[in-house]
Image (cartoon, rainbow, N blue to C red):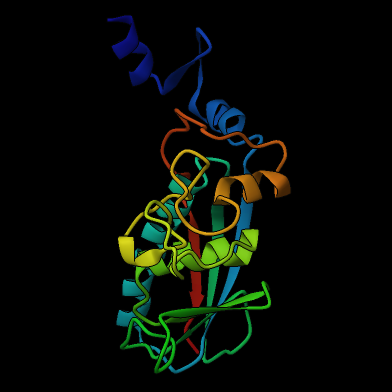
Length: 201
């Protein structure tokens, strides 16, 4: 078929025309916010840990893309061993907790602290604090449909139709910060690949 032939040539259908995949990716991401992250790994880590955490970050990037409905993505992550500086700091490499009492913490909206084996839902939850200043939704009354109530395992932010917590729903808050975004935003495609590099000191 024509579709099979064009796909085999590396072309993608966009608004009724066949275009190169690279051009399609540029169009698709033209209005999305790209984020680069520096990650400090506080303790000394080995190559096995870096291989495992790379997979964890790739999955976290996919879930951020999903939660933001294709309007924000992580383009690059640089991980530095034996470092306590960065956008994200990993501690307790053998734990999903960043300390004795918390899975993760966001400090002043400028830095996220996570356990070395952080849960993906924790990452998305802290991303809500870090990038959008969203409040907790696990304080009574809890929100049943939101990543800001991480115990539900939901990888999306609530809106007016399903918000059950206190205060403003998350998407209303997000759209105030990103007025060019829309919700719901559908058919945003697969998460762009994230480039991950590391320094093992």
